Image (tube, rainbow, N blue to C red; front, top):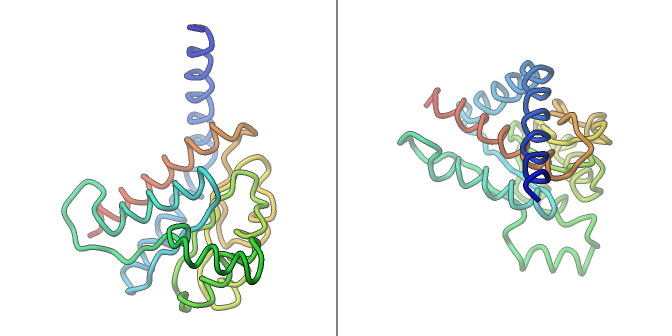
Length: 187
């Protein structure tokens, strides 16, 4: 079992190293997009399924509460938290529409939608990104593998260089913390 634990740590470190080496520019670009939107008074909207839903909630909380330093609360919301909306929309329109309908209801031009999907192909996240693009939002994806559909439809898609869901999710929350740190430095 100790070898299994060591292997997981080594895998994590390798994916983190590769992400750092290959994605610094893309991550910085996303940080600048997010920061500019907040300066303009726009909001950050996030969505994802399962562990990615938890990441969306976590990142939104870091913006509305605080990350490290004291600063004003920033407008951010995760579309994964309203069980009444999720179940009503899922029941009436289907699971593939649960985020798209919420985006249609609350997103404004210039807002940021961050769609999180380890495959880059989660249909409800893809639909939300497409709707956000139609509205005039700026779309950022957090994905893995080869980037999936999010690579084609997002303004910026941060593709974690791994095919293992756990390693991709670990990097997604790290990237989310980088977004928060960048914003903290500017507010």
